[in-house]
Length: 180
Image (cartoon, rainbow, N blue to C red):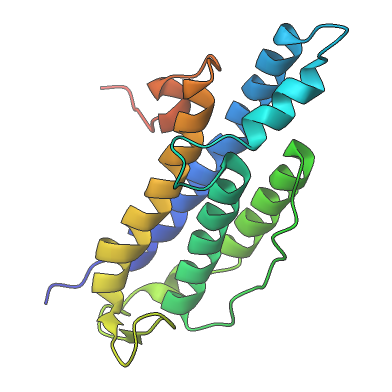
């Protein structure tokens, strides 16, 4: 198998995607405040946004962010073969969610490329994969990244569904374009 730089295709893109979330949360705050009235202040609208979901059988916004953070830290830790940090799932506010994202990004930044590069063939197991494993490459490309982006895009879509003024430019969160 051709060697892939598993670090380059996992950790930096997850940091970039997680860095987008606080920016769109700021737009959600502005959206909620603009909808507030004396009787129904913006904070009630914001609480509704944070607890909304796309459909009845999906998690609400807060849980989507928690799971995206869990995927990022767990995935990077598994690939680097280090202990996964444990976070309580007790966030209820934007500030608490932002703190969780910051903590996750800070952890991701402790993972060095040499801890992950060359780990394509390690065996990765998860508790719900009873007596089965995926290789590091399979885990990263077929489970970790799709699952991580599923929760990122679902969180984004919950805000978008509720009229928060965000678009593809916000989701992509900048491109590394260079002059010709």
